[in-house]
Amino acid sequence: MKRFLLLLWILCVFSIQVYADDAVTPVKFIYLNGSNTNTTDSEKDFVKGVEKVHPYIKSYLEASDFVRKNMLYDGTLTISEKPESFFWGYDSSQDLNSMDESLNWMSVFSPRLAQTVRSFISHCMHDAIWVQKSYNMQRVINELHKSVLSAHRKGEKVVMLGYSAGSFITYEYLIHKMPAMDLNSVWLNEDKVKLKPTCLDAVTASGMAVYSANGEFFENPDQNMLKSLFRNLDKYTEEQCAPEGTVLGVINYASPLALFYSDRTNHSLEINKYNAYLFEYMKKHDVFMLTVNFAEDPMGFPIADNMNIDDLKEYVDVSFLNEGRGFFYSKSDVKSPATFVGAHLSYMNHPKKFAKMVTDGYVEGYKYFYKLD
Image (cartoon, rainbow, N blue to C red; front, side):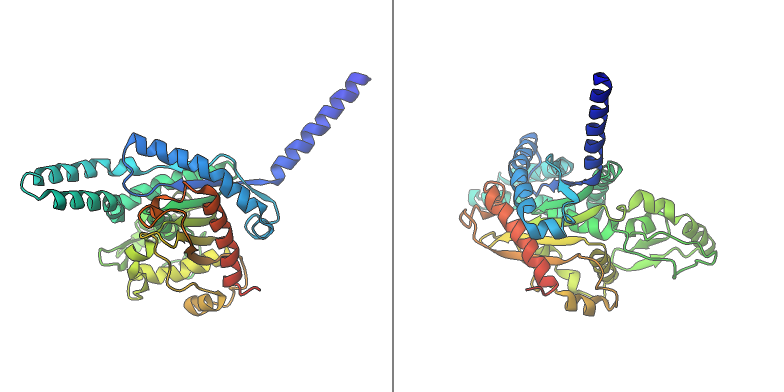
């Protein structure tokens, strides 16, 4: 009898534990490196930095009642203790080596000071420029997409943190992979096929359309082929798009995004017209995009104008924006513990201040966007 009761007690405790684990959804934080990180030592340093800063990010965010209520859905989500370091530096190393060979050749006749400045600028900027090229960017975001799909299969949500040039990748991931397109009322849906919301990469990978070099969007001119592709689009959506609800948000820091993407205000570009659909999707599906920069960071460019809910309504011209809890915010008013020269590299060296800045940025951004007191 005693053995039976002991066994029953063990089963009850085990069942309670399983239930408790199932009731809380983990959120995987994926950290992306910046530029000028192309070596094995660079990766080791980046991983150490991530492991150093993540416990503070987790602790500060989860300690905030406001964050717990809004980002973590009243505690039904919990930030995973183990972060993921997404290192893309090796991809650009071959091109960087080629550039260094050219620089070494110039040293024969170039003044030493000019050569030193040239080498410094090229190493700082090389990866940021390299990843801006569409064929390089697409390869990197496809690799990142594997991490997002892996998290989804494990039942996890995802927050992506892009450092410096890594913020370009998180932004492009949102543009290419978020299922913000509803094609049920457009094109050749003569068979009345009900399609899932899809993304740019699914549409282009399927062959239904392409983006030209000058930013225009062209559908497949073969109308019969287009009908067939339309019917098979869901397969590409499943492969190419982030599963709905998986990406919880993006935190970009030390970000020069506004400098490299200054053309986003050009409304004649088709890709910028798509931003309206993307922002609409992010708002409705609770996806936040937060940018935090130290005030002294020479490569941290704030977004000029933070948007509130009324601004977004005017921008996307839709009526259902009272749904959802997504928002967009840039916070660049925190003094760095480092000097102007070292500010860009100081975020992970001061994890408590960085974590507090992220937490304050989320709270301030949410309240500003929804005009809360």
